Structure formats: structure tokens, C-alpha cells
Image (cartoon, rainbow, N blue to C red):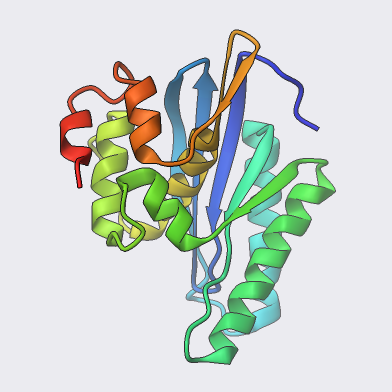
Length: 195
């Protein structure tokens, strides 16, 4: 379990069988710092079980490298193709198993919840999510794949759910309440949140 402390590292994963996105952030009180974001490509692998092995191995390597306190992961979404859902579920399960093998707690978020917490809209595009993350975490690099910022969004979403500062915990019901309590953290964005 996560001990109450002023700093914690959160790893976010956007599972996929072709490309898995990840992001790692350091939360220091009310400030959040980007540590890493990237992708794990599996497009060169034809065997679905080799893809799962790569997801597991790369997730363990990232956990060993960054030593996160928690893994936040995007839940598979239901589409029209049940085979795609099954593949995504397997990818998610393997990433979760990797975290659990290192005694890392796991929290799952729906795609809609992630978009809502980052942009204020559950229907935001991947590009809108990426642009908001660039502003929030003050980075300019545009990743090759939006899967990287999707993974980062999961980590930031988890950070927004429970901000720990000075031993006090606060849970936010949405973007508006977070912005009103954290005006210095989201400089200049409060006016843009209005519906």
C-alpha cells in the first residue's frame, strides 16, 4: 500500500498490442513533474504471445527503473469488435501482472474519465489531451505516437484524483474543482475551462 508521503511516482500505461504508451510523473506536494514518456512498439511481432511477453518484460523494466508507488492503467473500451476488446484486455492484464509482480498497487480508469480529468471533456480527442498535458507539465516535445501522451494522461489523471499535501488528502470531483483549488498549478488555464 502507498504510505502517505510528500512525494510519489506514478506510472501510467495505455495498453495496446501494437503500441503501448507509458508516462511517468513525480508528484511533489501540489507540483507534478514529467519524468518520462514513450512507447513500446510491437508491430514487428506477429505472434500474439510474444507481444504479451514484451509488454510484461518492458513494464517490469520501467517499474525497476522508475520505482513507481502506483501504476495507473487505462481500462479497455468496448467497441464493435469483440476480438479487439479481448486483445486489449490481455495487454492490460499482462501490464497489471507485471506491476503486481513488483508489489505495485494498480488503479484502473476508463478512457472517458481520463479525458474528463485532463481536459474537462470526456469526448476530447487524443490531440486535445496531448496539448493540455504539454501545458500542464510544461514540455514541448511532441511524441512520435499519441499513445505516449495517452499513457501520461493516465498517470496525471491518477494524480488529480487525490492530491496529497502536508498530510491532508483531497479528492476532486472534476476538473473545475481541481482548477479552483490549484490556480497556481494550472496558470492561465482556469479561464479556458468554462463550459
